[in-house]
Length: 442
Ligand SMILES: *Cc1c(COP(=O)(O)O)cnc(C)c1O
Image 1: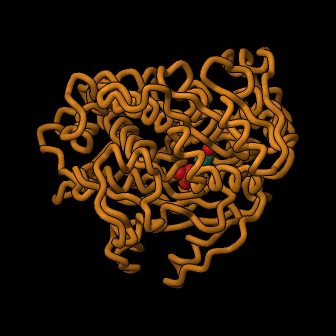
Image 2: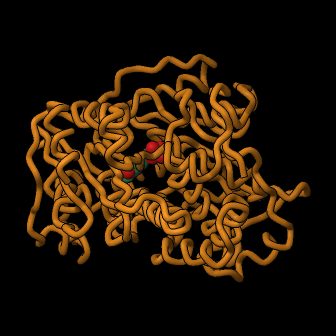
């Protein structure tokens, strides 16, 4: 399969090129040149397949021409070593819990898949005698998902750059206690400094002559496309439980609400529908960063500086995957509005929703999932079934959640294990020459 850039200036890339580059040379985002519709038979029997089995069918449609079947199966099965259950929260509202992976957030799926795909290419092409080095700047959650996704993967070393003192202790423990092929770099600066160091490293020809560098950010096709898997799984579970109805054109009554920041997760869901998954409608739920919401109302897209909110993994003022959504819909605002509606919530509303839901149902929402739940509460029709993506475990935000709900929620064992580990990090200034010297001597 070829991958084209949403800016249409760069040449088409192979899967391997698209994965290693992340961003296309013309600064566009890579898109697969076609999206294969899966056969009706697959949808008729999907409720009898395991998550791994159905994900393998989805993966074949994207990667089947580039990765041999046995290897792809291994990559998918190894990636999905945990479930994504659908849990009933209120009458016709369900939570798709995406927090059962190693770092308790949905980014585990994409990060684990990308690590294994990259390893496949390294082995197959005997790429580099040494190793591939993944550089990732993080303000908290991406670093842990990428570090854990790549942990113990031969031939790859990960450098996580994070701003000293600016990530929570829970987050920090998830990428500083791992050791092995993961090095945490504690930068004296802010997140933007970390990002600038990574960008400069990719542009430095001396460094790139010396080391094989690659990025693992969320726009990478190998992180982005696998997120389609769990939409199929949610559908299969609801179908199995007899919760869905269908109209004469085969459309279901399933509405999916996605708490969104960079819009990668929801875009993967849109891909799933292009593959034939009969989702009726999407809702993009935002925190106070309302750029996409305003676009849906007005047809005008105005990026803004991001605002800090309670749901901080969605604090994005210029969603990177907006380019993919536009491309998917041929730039038609009308068509986008037909498939996706929006919602935007200030922190007070998020708090209120967490309290209301906890009081009425006993379910503990995290601040991101709360945006999704609230949008379904407001927009779901009586005859529809709504699924919101619970994108992270509430214990990742324990202090906030306990403070809002007056609870003392349990910390899952695997999160406790991270927190008990010994922190190992290398302290760096925010000066590029020092970072470069460090990398050159590794
Ligand atoms: C990354 C993240 C989001 C936003 O996902 P996008 O794909 O960027 O829209 C939402 N919730 C949590 C917990 C996240 O980590």
